[in-house]
Image 1 (cartoon, rainbow, N blue to C red):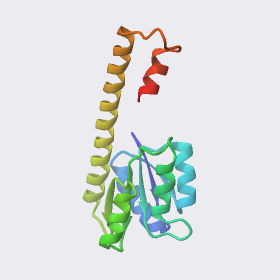
Image 2: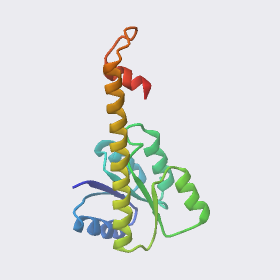
Image 3: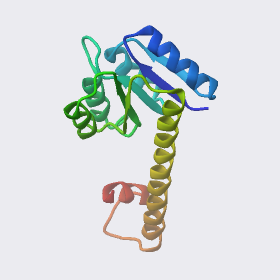
Amino acid sequence: MKTILVIDDTEDVRNLIATVLTNYGFTVREAPNGQLGVQMIAEEKPALVICDVNMPAMGGYETLAAVRDSSKTATIPFILMTGLVSRDGFRKGMVSGADDYLVKPFTPDELIEAVMSRLVRQTEVQLEADKRAQKLHEYAAHYPFPELSGSVDDFAGSVA
């Protein structure tokens, strides 16, 4: 099953989320802070990240920014969670590139719904991107451009 990284400075919260997700069949990794979380994301490329907003040193918004700034991790679905809800905070998270926002306390059903909807959406986006790349590859293969040097994949990469 897919791996989900949970980043929260409160061990009880991480354990609760990990238990729910593990019971649902996910592999769960945990990080107690944003700095370690960003490192784990870069190394392990989880299928999805759930991250608390309010953490010392590197909070959720900073963690999200670091993930979105790297081309290798920018497309990983990212769910922010917080117990301190404000309209400004919610907007900041969404404008920063969060895929979803969970308000603590949330139910196991709300957690699973958020996770599944983000994973389904990620799969849909990836399938669409794969279809477009395949069409471009087929087009380039049927209409060679002699003035271009390199492979069809090089051409497809330069167009995208």
